[in-house]
Image (cartoon, rainbow, N blue to C red; front, top):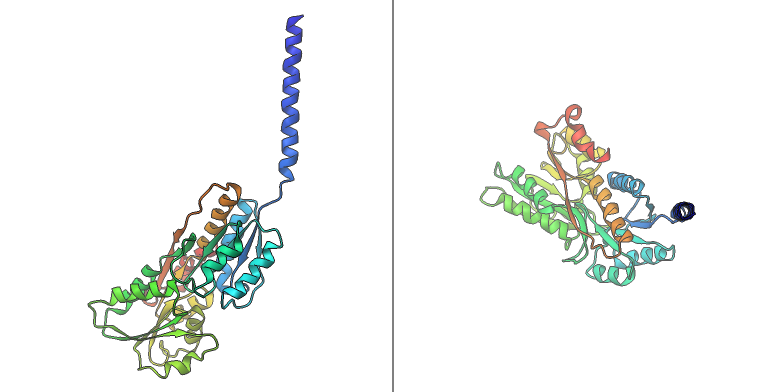
Length: 316
C-alpha cells in the first residue's frame, strides 16, 4: 500500500514539473523582444552600410528588435534630443547613439535617456566632444593618424589637413597620431581646415598655401576630391584619408587616392548591439567600451582583384 502511494506521489510530482515546464515555455514565447533605437546622422547614407549590417546580424542572433531612426543631418544636441524623446514614447529598452556635436551632448544624453541604457558608437567622423564617461565602441583614431603620417614621412612634403568639426575627439586623436609619425621627418603640416556646415571647402582652401599632400579626415570630402583628382592628384596634391564606401576603394584602385584607412563598421555595429543587449537583459551588467579594427590600403600595393576582400570583409 505504501509503495503504491509513493509511486502515486512521484507521478504527481513529475506531472507537476511537466506542467510548470509547459507554462514557462508559453510565457517565455510571449516575452517581447528587447527594442533598441539606433540614432545616426543621415541614417540613409551609404557610409553606414557595414555598420547597419553588423547591427542586424547581432540583432538576429540575440533576438532583438532594432529600430533605425529616419534622420537627416544631426548638427547638435537639440536635434538629437528630439529623436531620443520620440523613441522613449515608443517604449524603447535602450539606445545606440552616434553622438551629436556640441559641448552639451554628454549631459543631454544622461538627462534624456534617464533610466534607459545607452551606448555610444563612433567612426572616423565621430563628433563626440571632450571626454566622456559613457562606454564607446570605436577604432583607434590615433593609430589611424599615425599610419597616415608614416605614409607621408618618406619624402619632404607640405601637408594640408581637412577635418570635420574642430572639437571632435576622433579628429584630434587622428591629427595627434599624424604629428607623432611626422616627427623627425622633413614633411610638415602647413595648415589644417576644420570644415563647417554649408562651407565651400574649395574656396576655403584657396586661402592656404599650396600643399604637396592632402590628408582628408572627412569621408564625404575625400570622395568629392577623389572624383575630381587628375593624374593621381587633386590641385597638384596627393590624396590620403579615411573612407568607408566602395566608391572610395574604386578611387584608390584608379590611383586618385594614394592611401586609405578603413574603420571596420561591421564590427562596431555588431559589438554595439551585443553589448547593449547584455545590459538590457541583466540590469547589473556594466557595459564596456571597445577598440575596433581598421584596414589600411596603399595604392602601390593594392589590387582591386586580389585585395578587394580586405576592404569588404566588414560587409560579410
